[in-house]
Image (tube, rainbow, N blue to C red; front, side):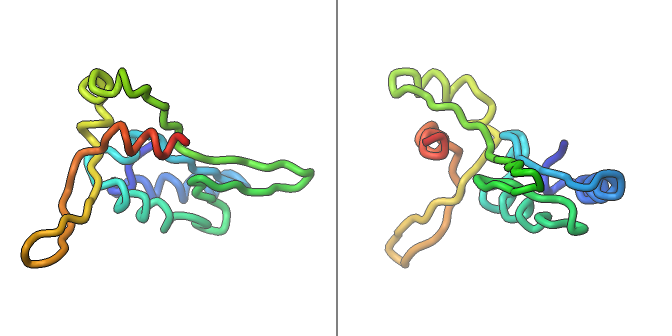
Length: 126
């Protein structure tokens, strides 16, 4: 559908809101490409309840009438430890998605960008 940093995403979603009663947005792994995971996640969360019809579902659910419950989460596969090295070299996710990590240096703490790792996606899979 589109990354949250793309200017066309919000107009696209607003057009869907005009057409449908409820819109459920669940981020796929490509939504986090070409950017930092937490930043993109915050941008997507800002779209939640857009026009009072769109729901961003990230590890949460939404209840509808007639006991209907919609669950939403990004699908991250579990990678066995013995396959981690091969998989991290083979899948674009581990090159295209970055994370921020806190580092401690002589002058204090700072944040630095790093690549997504198998440990990250295994933690999210759990």
